[in-house]
Image (cartoon, rainbow, N blue to C red; front, side, top):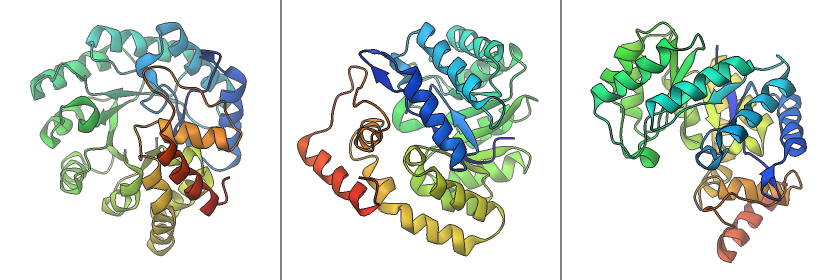
Length: 290
């Protein structure tokens, strides 16, 4: 359902507002270059600083622009279960194909609390739900046993795994079975996770090189691990520089250098330091992106 290379798409801003024209242009760029799906309103899309109206606008624009050509997996997570339900129901009404829900941040719920949170959201929507585990952002790690419990709920169909722990990824794949889609949430671990039995990636770096990530995923899913391995090593330096500062600062800066969006962030994010900007520029030039 959500296999291959999905992009955690940035939210372009212009004069403090969502830049609809730029967002539509980015989506068309991805469709042209083989991206398998769009993920709006995720961490890379600065969801934490979008108000509800903007959140709805970004999902609506993504759904309308994709027009059924590729799926839209809308970020609808929150650290409030009630708000997560509201955002997910809205995404369903807007025509999204699925919902990506992060583990509640800051609250630090127990494993039972995580189960109750996601099961409560699942009961209120018909959308397929992909869980999102990213302990570095949320301060809570959803354990494989909890994921296995949640995988028994009919419309919880997968997880974006960004724990950085390949043993944990292996345990999830083994315990949840082949129908449950384990998706890489870390660009640098995409090929290893696919080799373990993962089904794809929700990528930051694909914002810049959608064709390369699509090639890596399609090769791995077809069993062509030599091609996938080659793509993995080709992308290493670009994946690394995308996290030289807090995501999405580097990727938005890169897209601005490439002329695809304005160089504008939503506070408290800000432009990169001069040294990091120079390093980013150098890598972009090496990949013929600047």
